[in-house]
Amino acid sequence: MDAFQGLMTGFQVALSLEGIMFVLIGVVVGTLIGMMPGLGPISAIAIMIPITYGMDPAPALVMMAGVYYGAVFGGSTSSILLNAPGISGTVATAFDGYPMAQQGKAGKALAIAAISSFVGGTVSVVMLMLLAPALSSVAISFGPPAYFALMFMGLTAISSLSEGSTIKAMIAAVAGFMVVTIGIDPQTGTQRFTFGNVNLFDGFDFLIIALGLFAVAEVCMLILNRKNRSLSDDQKLGSLKLSKADLKEMSGPVSRQSFVGFLLGVLPGAGATIASFISYIFEKRIAKNPEEFGKGSVKGLAAPESSNNAATSGAFVPLLSLGIPGSGTTAVMLGAFLVLGVQPGPLLMTDRPEIFWGIIASMYLGNVFLLILNLPLIPYLAKILSIPRPLLISLVIMFSLIGVYSISFNVFDLYMLLVFGALGFAMRIFSFPAPPFILAFILGGMMEQAFRQSMTISNGSLSIFVDSPLPLSLLLVALVSLLVPAFLKWRSNRLAYKQR
Image (tube, rainbow, N blue to C red; front, side, top):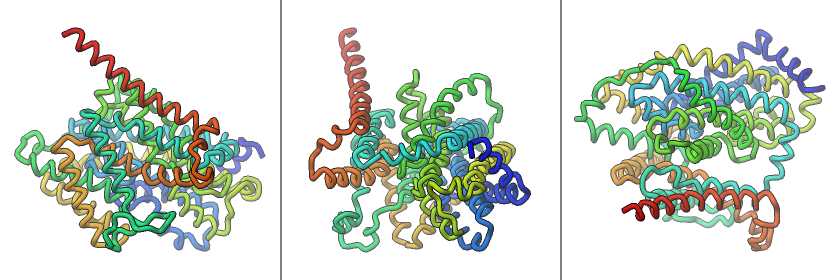
C-alpha cells in the first residue's frame, strides 16, 4: 500500500461521523488542558486509558493523539497571557509572547501562535506521512555519543538566551546543572545533594522549576511594581489582524522551524521542549536584529510555536514505525496501544493500516479544527488581561499551586515552588536570565546519562565521540557556534577601542 492509498484509508476513518467526533473531543480536551499549568498531555492520556477501554482501537487512539497535539497547541495561551507555561513545550513561547501581550498586542500574539502552530503541525503531518519508515532508521542511528553531542550543541547557545552579561548567563546555567543533579543517581543508586530528605530522592519536576522561575517570579514583580500606573491599567487585546509585514517576518521562521521541529521530534527523548528551545536559539542566531528577541519579536514567537507542534508529530515516527516512544507522552501512548490490543512497530502499517493511517489523517483534520476553534476564541481568551490585577495575581498563584500539587500530591513540592519563585524573583532583580537555567536543567540530565553510557560502551575512552561521523559533526557545529560569536564580539570590541 503506497502513501496515497494509505492516506485515503486513514481519511475513511478520520472523516467518518465517529472519527470526526473523537478528533473534535480530543483537540478540545487537549486545548483546555494545555491552557492549565500542570495538567499536561501525559496526565490527560493516562486518565483516558481506562475511559477508552473496550472501545474500537482506531477512534480511541485518534482521540488520544488529538489530546496530545491539542495540549501543545493550547499551551501557548497561558504562556502568552500570564507568563505561566501550560506545558514544558511552551516555555520558549513566553520569551516573546508575554512581552508582546504586555505591549497591548495580546490578540496579535495569540494569532501568530495559532497560525504558526497550524503550519508547523500541518507540515509535520505531511512529513510523517512521507518519511515515517525512512526516518525510523535515522532515529535508531542516534546512539549515546550522538545524543551527548546534540545536547552539547544546544548548550553552546546559552549565551544566545541572555540579553546582558554572558557571565551571568553562564552562572545561571551552572545553577541549572546543579539543581538537575539533585536526587538518586539512576546508574549507581547514590543519593546526591538530598541531605537525607526523602522528598528529594526523585529530584525536581520540570513544572516546579518553570512555574517558579516564570509565573511566581512574574507575580512578585507585579506586586513590586504595583504602583506603576502602566501596569495597573487594563491591558488591551489589540488587533487580531496580521499585516503583510508580520506575515513576511514570520514566514521564514515558521517554514524553517517546522522542519527542524519535526526532525528533532523524531529523536527519542528530544521532544517539543528541546525543539522549541533550539528553534528559538537558531532564529536568534541568524536574525539581523537579535536584540529584538525577548522584547516581543514576531520571529521569537513564531519559531518555537511552529517547532513544538511539529515535534509532536515527529514523536509519532518511532512510536508507529518501531514501537519505540519518542517522548514521555508517547510512552504513555504506547501503553494505550497495548491496552487496546494494538502492537505498534514495523508491521502496524500492513497489519492495521486503518490505525496507522487513521492517526495520520486525523492530524490533518485536528490541525484544521484547532485553527478554527482557537482564532475565534482569541477575543474571549484575551479577556484574562482585563481581570483586575489583584484577582489575576491570585488566579496565577492558585493555578500554579494546583498544577504543581497535581503532579505528586506532595505539599513539599509547593514549598519548592515558592523557593524557585523567590529564586526567579532574585534573578530578575539582579539581572540573571532565567532561560539558561531552564535550558541547562532540561539538557543536563540527558547529557549526563548519554555521557556515562558512552563511557561505559567505550571503556572510558573519549575517542568514541570522534570515531563516528555523526557525533563528530555535531561537536564541530557546536564548536563553531561557540567560537564564532566570541570572535565577532572580540572584533567589535577591538574596533570600538581603535575608534576611541
